[in-house]
Length: 468
Image (cartoon, rainbow, N blue to C red; front, side, top):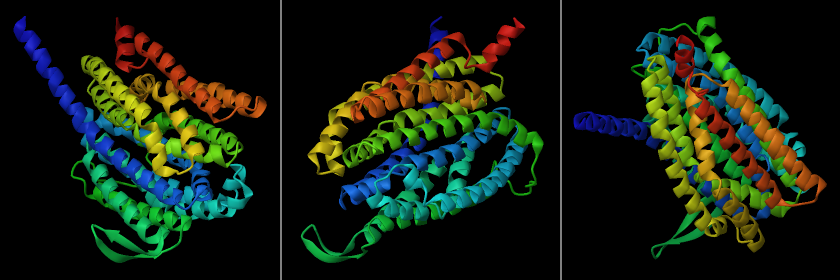
């Protein structure tokens, strides 16, 4: 009996080690991205509230585009993770060649759409007329390198699905460093700087908001080229020698998984656009507070989404190996780790909210409003963390229809409808809008909890029940 317990304990420790080995590079990569977002927001914020509003006003459209492309990559994540779990590397390589095809087609289409619609996006987002032209130019420059950005998203997911989370992290570090250095050089004019008692002249282009856009565009381009080269040379999943013609045997299952997730992400991201549009209509103060609070909040979701990537990959591996016991053990390990991390993260956000807001704005009104909504959402983080893990495991095994339905109902039935009533009909402010967002998060916790308890999340559980 004691030997069995020791063996079980050892296996659990090994599983925790595997989980963290997959999760920490993704967390670090997201932390770096968030740190750069913090720096961008702080640099642009130093130019004034109008500059912050010009950059932040179209940020939800950026999420819409990025999320839609990420959804396409989920189909390949599921297919490649299952192929690797089954030991079928040839199938994984063929699926990567199809990912290259999808990247090229998607990148070209989105380039045409984003550049062609750049002048209209600020108008649709109800941006103040005084900053519409600036917001449009920022958006246009940001999406000139749409093809490399698409490659970064899809190929990054391909590498993680194969268990390689360190390479996307390393490339992310390089991209972020380029972005920060170019921000310093392009946003500000030539100026005297004093560091550790040494004075020198710092060169600068003085391009302001446009400089921030150019810096990001250059960094995205470098990242896309680097990750494409890595995938091409990868020892396990390189598409070299594979056909790049459409292959229905691979694209069919991948798109079958990706399509519901794409609809989900498109629908929820469109909801974010509608949400931000209603907040923008409340004025510059609410727009600035919301933009900064979103930036601050994003850092505290890093543990959740880092663990989700690991959950999706390992669940896909277990499903490919038809290992029901491992699937259940993974869920039992991920859930308490995730909730613990999100309790710590939420507690830190609650305590640090005012200080973090002060990094990005000197306006006491913006700081007070942003701190209030951040402390509200901090309380809901552990509940949201649970839904993140269960959704991640479902994505890894290709079960994307249920998350699609849950997220669309939560976004449009609770967050958007509630925000419309509160802000547009009752005349309430930003606090009420974030209250609706929290209600959305709690709804997802409840529905994914039911899904977990009923075994709906686990296709091997479904098969076992049918056989018995």
